[in-house]
Amino acid sequence: SAVISQKPSRDICQRGTSLTIQCQVDSQVTMMFWYRQQPGQSLTLIATANQGSEATYESGFVIDKFPISRPNLTFSTLTVSNMSPEDSSIYLCSLLASGVGNEQFFGPGTRLTVL
Amino acid sequence: GEDVEQSLFLSVREGDSSVINCTYTDSSSTYLYWYKQEPGAGLQLLTYIFSNMDMKQDQRLTVLLNKKDKHLSLRIADTQTGDSAIYFCALGGGYQKVTFGTGTKLQVIP
Image 1: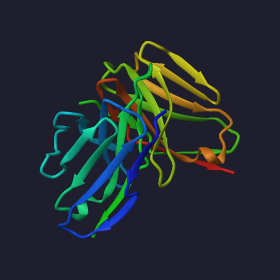
Image 2 (image 1 turned 120 degrees about the vertical axis):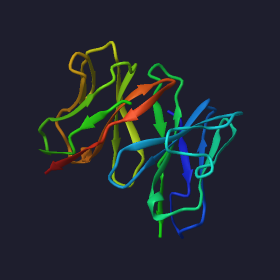
Image 3 (image 1 turned 45 degrees about the vertical axis):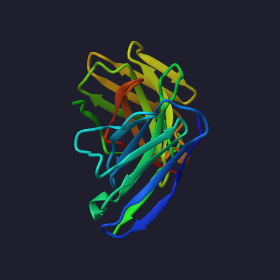
């Protein structure tokens, strides 16, 4: 399976600021995804990040709040803009493997706390 | 949309078998997955099953799929303390959107 790293692993931020989370993969992948996991909750898909096109956002998520970049096939960023305490979550990137099961593999996550 | 439900908590004794259950509403998913999340960590893919299969065994893990009842289960044989984690079922795969269950916290008592 691919090796996925995220930076930062955790951060504590002030209300109204923005944080950019980086996701790096050790191999080229077509589809990458960004998820949010609020405290004690399951995962919710924010958007699908495709290289060379704009990200596709799920209902309830908008580009102005969560801008995404996908400059190449091994890297993506998610920015959490104008943060509020409700944005405190774990943010995870994942990739779609090209194997038989079309599995998604996940990065270690970024734990964000907004004060 | 798809609803994927799991019981919140399961407690078993070390050495016993654990069975984690998952029910869903939409039967169109091609793949059904089980993920493990240890405290402070990301998600680890444990195993998956195709929707046209009834059972899959992988070492200590057995996945059972009852398509009629829309029920998926994960059995962990000889449960160890290292198996303590939150387990998520997930449906979808490929270019389908993956929907995650609510998660079951497994506590293994030594």
